[in-house]
Each structure stands twice: as structure tokens, then as C-alpha cells.
Image (cartoon, rainbow, N blue to C red; front, side):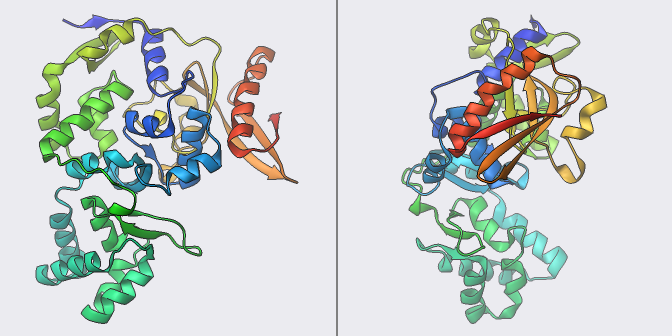
Amino acid sequence: MSLSLSQQQIEAFRLERAYLTGSDATPITIASKLAGIQAQVFSAAKLSLGLRSNSTSREIEKLFLRPNGIVKTWAMRGTLYALSANDLSLFCSAIGYDAIERYIKHWKRYYNIKETDSERLIEAIGDSLSLEPKTRKEISLEVSSSLGEWGKPLIESGWGGAVKCHCELGNAVFSEIKGTETSFVLKEKYVKRWKQYSHKDAFDEILRRYLAAYGPSNMTDFGYWIGKQMPVVREVWSRVLPEMTEIEYGTRKGYILKKDIRAIRNAEPAKDTIRLLPLFDVYLLAHRKKEHLVNNAHYKKIYRNAGWISQTILFNGKAIGVWELQEKKKILHIRIKAFERLTNEQKSLFETEKTRLENYLEQRAWLHFR
């Protein structure tokens, strides 16, 4: 039997679980509970963590450079994510368990590389990786000296290349910038605890975390979020289904974990809350359909061409505009571009977000309304 709730209760639950209603949680906890922070634009990922935890940019930066902090790697949909270091084994076991097989097939199809040569390439990259950060070019130079020049294009690809295979396996993660280039290190530099999961157990746990953070959701939503084919999604969904309950809200239906029933019933509806979301914020990426977030007339202002997702203004959980951040003469300028005319009361609510940005960047800021 379905549980019937109001749209306001759903929005309140989602905002609370997304750490958009205020919390004293640490950035590491937030990254873990939200099943990662999208990091295609690294500065946006750090800002997302900072605004949710009231941390400064320097505090967030340090978490990416210390053991058992936060690591950057490829995860959902093959895109970059910031993950709690303690969760790396979970995501790699669920998503990257078949990485070697996938890369061998890909290189065979598009580069006509023999399976034995692909295996040699993967092994050579593994031998090159160390606890000292190395760029793709540095890894490529070492590998090509033993295997030949043919492996260079596969390693130096801007989309991750052959090094991405080792990141998906959990062997390596991103490290600091060297010059203008990203670098990679063995996971042991930042990950000091490694819990072994079976592929099924890991996938099941990620679904539980997804539902806890973004429910009510359905199977299509989960497939969209994680980026796997529906047969794979259907299998994991069926395993976890006994732990779920169906929710009806308006004309829609979705599922949450049974253990969250009390929390969603007691969720306090959002009241006069403005939040500024960075580029590609995870709150905007969790569901296949977006009607609950933005009116169709403004959809393309948020979800733009080439998969670009704008910096978004939320009012009580719904998108009401976009924003930009510019710096002139060491002063930040927050430019608000609302879809419709803002009331004076709404404008006053932006002061709290301005303070959050000032705290994160440790700079003064001015608000500008278009």
C-alpha cells in the first residue's frame, strides 16, 4: 500500500537530505551522505561542499590533500566526482568492477589494439603509478619507453584515457595540479582504510544511499543518476525493493527506504529559503524528469546545451533563476538573474547566501539584481 504525502513534504525531505536547510555536518560526511559531489568543474564541487558546511575554500582544499579526506575520481555516469576517501572502495566495487574488460573492448573497437597489448598497457600504467603525483604525460613517457609510442594517445587522452581505467578500479585517484596539468597517485596516498565489497553488495549500498539522499525516486531516476543500462539497474533495484516503500505525491509516485518513513512524514516544509547552487549541483542531477524543480518555460536556462547545468537559485526548493559570480578589484559581485520579478522580501533573503559566499571565499561581496 502506498503512502500518500504532499508535495511540500517531499520538497522538505529532499532539501533536508541535500543539506540545504542548515546543518553542522562536516564536508566529508556531506560527500558521503550525498553519494558524492559532482566535480566536472572542480571549483564548483568545492563550493558545493563549502556552502553546505559553512567551510572556507582553504578548509575544503585541505580535505583533498590529506589522508582519509575527500578524493576526486570518476564515478557516476563516467563523470568526475568528489567522494569521501572511505567510500572509494564502495563506488569502485559497484561501478568499476568490469573496467578492464570495458577498456579492452573499447580499444579493440576504436584503435584496433590487441587484447594482449591492452593488458600490457594497463599493467605498465599500474607499474608507473606511485605515491608521488605524476601527470598523464609523465606516465606516458615512462610507459612508452618500455612498450613503444603506440600507447601514448591512449594514455594522454583529455577524457581520462588509460589512466581512467586504474581510477575506476580504485588503484589511483587525482592528486594536486602540477603546473597546469592534473596528476594521479596510488590510492594509498589518501585512502588509509579499504573495505572489500562484492559487486552486488556495493551496488545495493549505493542504491540505499541514493534513495536516502534523493528519494522518493523510481528505477528510471536511479538509472539516469548512476549511468548504467536498465537490465543492470533493474537487478539491483529488485534486490533492494523489500527495503522500500512506495510514496504517492500529487500525480507522481516514487520510493524511499522504509527506515525513512518517519523522517519524511515529519519533514518541515521549507519557508522563505533562498539557496545558491553551484554549477552541476547534485540536487539538480538526481531525477530524470525535472518538473518538480523548474517550470518548462525556464528549463533550458538551467539544463543547457552540451550537458551544462547553470548556477541555480532555489526558493523553497524550486528554481527561480540563475546567478553569476564575478570579481572586480578584490570585491565579489553576485549577479542575480531571476526568471520573474522578485519581491523585496525575497531580495532580503539573499543576504544569508551572500554571507555564506563571503565566508567560503573570505572576501567581501555585493549583490546585484537584474
